[in-house]
Length: 211
Image 1 (spheres, helix red, strand yellow):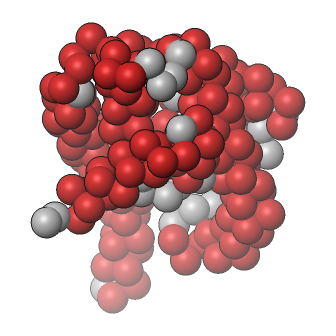
Image 2 (image 1 turned 180 degrees about the vertical axis):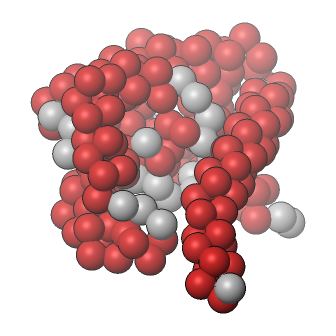
């Protein structure tokens, strides 16, 4: 059995045994940057609505979004109290300057609300966006509000998909897993592009010193 299959089995077992608290715990973990298959949690719970009436779709949506919010708050404060001091002290060793830190602060001050909302709808990004939001010290109240509002449609759509697909609820995970891979590939290309342009002046300076 693969790691993914094991994680899916553990997640579905927890939901079957604990009900709403199981959904809440799993969504907290996923939003706190723990690799929990969130695209399994809500569709499986939706499947149980059809099979045994164990859940209500609106209650599930609220519980899932609340779990997202709590997990995101944890990640936010990890970024604020751990990530920011680390970057301020060691950022130069990972090619991250204070001016870029200032730029990140300004970005979240200006676009933080939209970022917090729309990032909840994107695979991969939604799991980790809270860390940079905390590092940039985005306004905490606005962060919580827009994170929760963004999580509501995400949780509803996945739960509804589980209701409609029934026994085929795992198809949701298969489709969104491909989206995960596509987004990871895009970020890898962007990071490589950024790293190339960052290191090029350093190499040019080193070559000039050797002449």
